[in-house]
Length: 235
Length: 212
Image 1 (cartoon, rainbow over the protein chains, first blue to last red):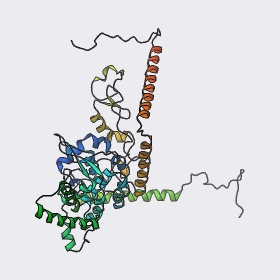
Image 2: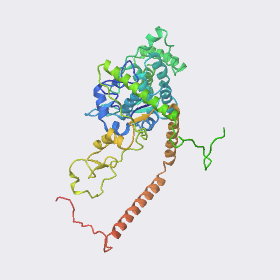
Image 3: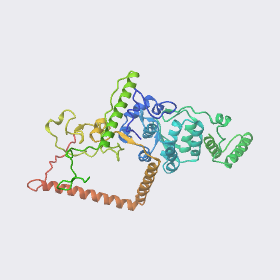
Image 4: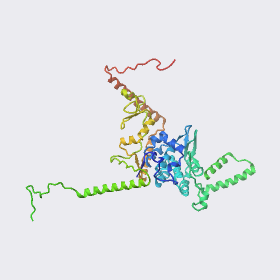
């Protein structure tokens, strides 16, 4: 068993033979413009040549930020290049799970990379939910490169984006059925939040606060901060 | 009937001088050849049915090895500030050794790192270095081993990292001392190389390169 060192053959117009994802070439999950930019980039040519699932770790460990494309020239980030490489390799399920769990515990950008891959490449919605939702308990910081400038984000926020948004890191994510829909069809158990009992307490506080607002007409600033955090967590 | 023996104790008959053949080996070879030709005929037929032309695939050389990922970043800065002698005709084209990034295996010179790295990834280069252009799939075990190694490596690096300011100054001073020693050694070497032993006198112009 072997795979090609680069993506030239996989992107050949004359036909593709290999693993299919969503019934198509996995590399086509990235848009053509992004694909071309990745293949033109120096990082791809130099660092992504000849990687396999084991040596991919070397590069993923060195990641210092995530993001899609940046700058006026819309250069792809190393994160995006490695995600592209993962789509080319289509590693076995156990390997991806290992990236997420054990290796992800140590290297946060590797976890973000694997989560991105799972969202893109796994075909069953319930599996995507059950695999990614445990990561909502991970609150490590991540640096994110935007079109111009930088942004601070967290692993749980990134995963929440993956589950909720339709466009992340210059990629249109495949359609994912909403959680409520899957719960109605009984394909998925209702989610138990990592906050546990705290969530109930927060809700109680909320109600009290509302009472206060009605009474006094203002909320103290610290409580407001907590409130917004809870909204981000609950998604 | 007693067997007839020659003077050296070897059994002889009137045809024993003939060369003997390993029939089984040759039968196996013939079978292999027939199987191959049958397969090729089938592939040819299928290609004809699909309206395509059949091309026989060139066999992979036996000693070719798998392509592997680069161990480190490509060092493109190692020639900065160096002087090298270049043959007189090396100015045109990529052929031969010239000024720039030189590939030993293919005897080509490239002027910039982008072209050079593209060449290193090219089929031509891979064939010249005896690589197959295919990468072995990693198993879960290999991935785990790699992870353990990376984790250990990172812990080692962290342990070496110094937080104390005075210790950091000490480390920097040692580093600088080492570099100065290296420069001194190079200078002495250069001096020894010249005939009179005086060394290379570098012509220094006052305010070199400053436009006033």
